[in-house]
Image (tube, rainbow, N blue to C red; front, side):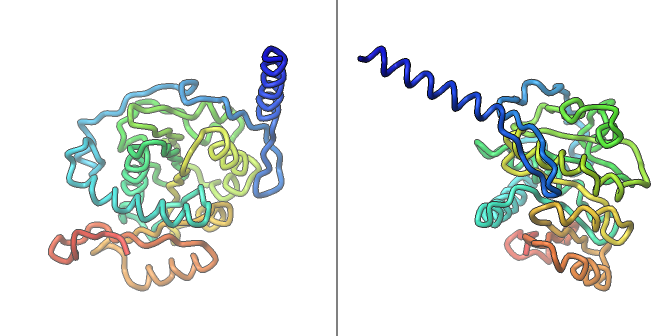
Length: 272
């Protein structure tokens, strides 16, 4: 009898496994993609970051970095809001340039990845001024544009840097066809696969400034929520108000004030 029970149990497990392997995912546009939950990060190309450059770009470099605590607070608040609503995709946006959104995207990904069991996938979709690979010091990364153009598969442009539980889809190329790419079926595929196959707790998209082009406006309906980044001394009030107007139909988890004088901060908070 025990042998029969073992055989039945094994058969059920085999059916469950095969069923999961054959499961498909439907994207926001209705396209269907084959999902392979067994695909592991170890299959991605491993790369090294240039940690010596982190300080120059205000990127978290170690557990003793004073910046880390601020981003842990941000991480906790963002994750709490996203978990309340079962959100998985987060856009990092700013009204204009020089607000520090790429730095925010990278540091938030590092902070999320450092929390046990919370993988972050960071995707550089700023096709005007891509900065993620440069700030991390990743040499000769594949470009996400190769995926959008059909030259490479998604897993071929996904990297595993030597950061705790962070995956990176980088870019170093400029394109004026961003809105076209970001409203294509490949954008739906990118979202569906990074959420369902990469075991990502959060997929973070570093996007172009809201007021500079239509790329971000075109892509925002596909994501669950956004974090708005402004910079003291750089972002003007009319720009911030216009950005908030453009985000009226987007779930905004909060606004981050960057580059604020320490004397103006209350309890070291950058987020409100």
